[in-house]
Image (tube, rainbow, N blue to C red):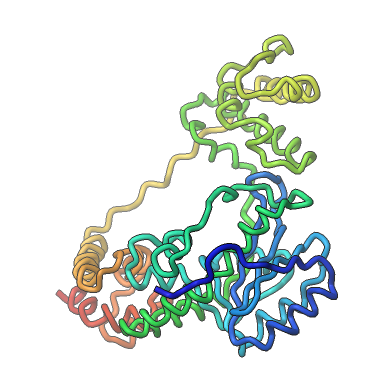
Length: 383
């Protein structure tokens, strides 16, 4: 266990461009920085970064991107190949840093990936810090509204802990990876992280179909639900409030199933506040009327999955590869999905490589996976 400082450690609150410039000048001389971000998707309709936490081995800072709108100096720091950048579960942070600021990090170390490759039973940051650094994190503000200003000191202290102990955790996990001969595995995964970019979600108007319980509605009910979800999203966008905080999915399902048509019917409706009824009731009823007025032939259907053609030979190859993977996972004390995900197994079964070179050329296949599993995979496919 790495010894970590006990109790809260002071952090800097960076709210001006000059303060950010000075911070980057200082930590840019360090070989390593830890980074995290806080967004507010649980509270806001339009998600964005509301805090950026940064720690070196010497100091911790919290950058306020609402007042420091140009973070290009920070971007240059994270892209510096001489500075190792540590995240825990970097995927989402890297995507939203790219989306909001065009910031792209290099020379990465992800403590979540490292813990997975070590076969850690619990890979959450709190569990890892408690086990390896002796620090217990308070989860009180896990779903806090980071868009609020001013942020109280206890929320800032909470945010600071997400990066303050990451350098110490990184040291422990890196040493364990090296001792287990798995550092090269992790480094290959970290290089892949550098290529992550934000890609906007595909929106084709079918978000209502993802409401849990929508499958149980009639076609008319689906039409009402579609109009109601569209109405709710418009209200949420106007208020910049998370959609479920306007009206819950459960309430929308009830409305779609019952189709109330008068203001009186909306009063005391479970899941809909009196204020929404008072201020938005007419528009809500208008959405219901549009769903009720839709011609029968235009009513939506809940899509059914395309039937998958059975291919016994392909499925047999996948099963043989799974058997190899299970044995290796047990030997290495790894989760089978971490050792080789299902998609990779299927890609190998589809390609049917007959030699090591062909196996390594499969895009889904990592080099380290080919080294660990390759020979047995080829034998299984040839059997």
